[in-house]
Length: 310
Image (cartoon, rainbow, N blue to C red; front, side, top):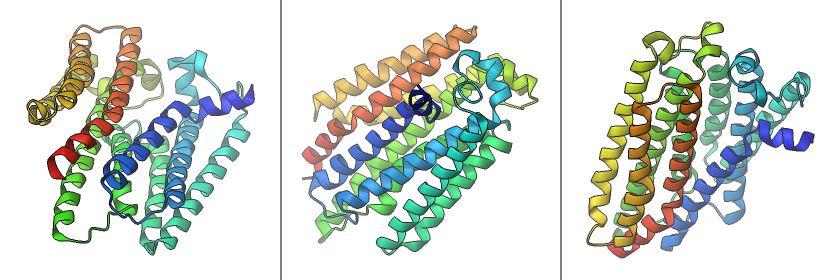
């Protein structure tokens, strides 16, 4: 039973999504194009392990610090002091943090980029500062969490750099890098909207703890409209990208239209009429599904790029 509680505490589904995203970026966009890259398969597994380990520690410290808030916002999902003691949770947090930093540092030195070890130390520190001080600040906390998700994509470019051997391959690498950067922007925007929606959903507990989140300061309606505005910007970016697929790659266009664009448009419509905590919970889950569908589009988009640049 405690094993199940542990996996729920570290948000195993979210960790699996991050790992899947990194694997698809690596094996569809990089090695999938035949490039020799910095990391072998074994070293890449170490990078994924370090990423999800530090992320897991961030979820734990957030639950430890937010225990009083969560008792109000989601009393049926409390794990700390219910299924796992607070002291054991802290031990898990320190263990996973140290393990993630050491693993990431080892990888950085192995590939001759020792300075990259600061990334893992910085992320661990930022996750603690977010949970302790920044989560309740207007927009800042939302931006930090969303940037960390985006960087879990960009980190592949930092550690697993393609090694082009001629000018043609250099141009191919640039186009692939642009595609990866777009995915990181898409992930940032969707998760940023989701963080705003979650703040609206959790407004009661956050207010009781004196937090200054966006919906507390400006009201639910303003926060809702802000989330809709960011969603519309995301939709515009999708349209800008997807029109390139209409004549060249029908499958890619159909996937983006039906499984990313339409669900996001549905989200905007539902958000406009949402009022209750239950409705905002549904919207949060809908956005998570949208993020997953975006991740699963990576093999399709990589095939489009092969058609264009190879």
